[in-house]
Image 1: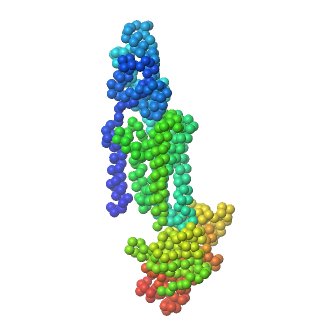
Image 2: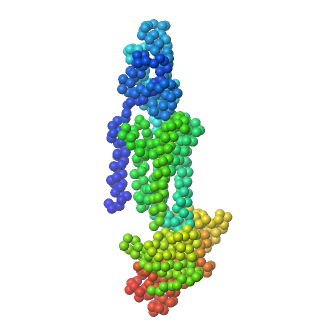
Length: 371
Length: 254
């Protein structure tokens, strides 16, 4: 048994790949998860480095938990939030400086205060930031701006989170749900590999090669079939996540774009499956070898964002599944437009990867189809 | 070694066919012409080059040298057209186990571009011919070995080919099933088809074949009808012919 490649793979390579994949995903290799969040600040008041609003932003950054990015208007900041470039948007209204000034002038006289409200918009796709950011912003406002140490002091500025209602209903499942679409599609690698290796083993592929059907016709027919299977899988996942409480906020165009990306990704997995079947001599060996392509995508490309260590996030950028999950998170969780730059970039990367891998798989298929 | 002059009505013409794998010459200068409407047998022990010859005929294997013409078409240059006139039943009974016998035959009818409106009738006809009418609706994975081989033959015939290649058509069959296949092959010949079959069963070659080519180590070492070969070598049967030519027996399978 020690001469059989499939046995050697399962005995030696598989545990190594599995351990490394888990380690990089959950921080054993490459360090812990990042704890710095990007906060967009939109100051609708007067500009100036000595204004209370500027001091507030500086104090937030000084906590070391957040990195502040200044935006000139709320629209641009909201766009950055929807595309995942920031985890929150802090909107400081024009009267903010006057409100702080009124408190400092009349600390014990609420009747003399100028009351105002600061809006904090949060990323629904990041559960941790949705819990951390409001807390840090609130405490920084209390201690650094107003210098108040009491447990529930009265101050003229209130912090509201217009998006908090939806954040409160999200769960860890909502964070992982976009990755499940890619997760389901990735196993197509094994399905395709087993099927073709098995047909080759049984002599069916050779038999088909004796018919007038060209290899192009056979390949196209099977690619179309597996693409249809991929769409069925995506539909089933969509139905299940919806039933389990994850309700994508994408409009019709966004939903269609999501399914398009999953379909393109299915083509990539078909290609990996064909490559695997070309390498494997038997269906059993194909099952084992398919994990070489399957595992990196599963662990590095399905649960992106703050759930992974920085090393894993970097490594994830080399697997197509990463871009699928990123696009679906933007579309289904953040409500990004179907034609937003981030989504189109993800689609372009997945498309290019799929084209290359599928062409490689087709070449390999043609070679191993004959005896 | 005899070398035939190709006749105008030859279905298959093989000239100086050679196939080399690494340092092994699987086929070594094979030349033979197979006439239309004859049953031609390629007889030889395992590893003689019979299946490799069939693979070269079908285009599955690219010859190292020589030419193969089927119904006047060059197998190398016009492979797609050659495959339209060929029906192949390979040595492995390659059928889809989760499709019924009928569905397997229909699938290959589609691969051979049999017109849809004719396909059902052709499938019925060919399934009846191979004696699988009662079992056609069962999944092929549940068939016995003999039944699988019969549906394999049906898959090779659904498009009404001019030349039928049967690679070891009765291996693993019981005597009754084997006799049924022999009768069926004779019917094909009587219906005007050219049948090329490979076998290592002497009695099969003697019973079925109009002419036999004995092949050993990739070379054609004898050619003629069974009666001619027995007379030429003063042998009782083709096994004796083989022994006289090679000094060895053809080891028969079970």
